[in-house]
Length: 147
Image (cartoon, rainbow, N blue to C red):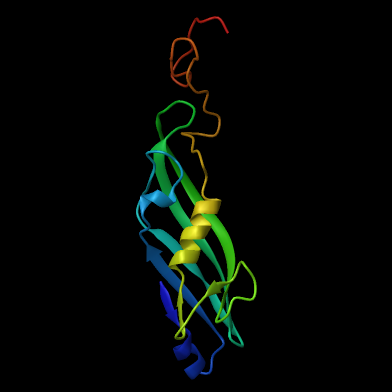
């Protein structure tokens, strides 16, 4: 996920679109036992403004794991917009640094995934979960326990 801004400058352009499929390590997820299903799709536009590089894009992925309510299989489709700035010298604490004309999106994408991906996933939005007394999956059938 490295973009060579020297080539962009040499071509006389100030912006370029990009698209990457990225396989992050599962430790980027904060959901125990969850995994990425396939690659994370990273798309966007990179713009040059003097020495600064502005990147606006989207992260899209599918997460598979255990439902936080009923412990059944759950799947979450995630699509998150992002904006980051790369600078040769850090001017703001949120800036990422780049050197030798190469912008590596990996650290920013990992940081964004850690802060924007869900911390729980559900098999469905209206999941009823498990009975707190007998453990019956209430999506499958009701139980006779006193509430």
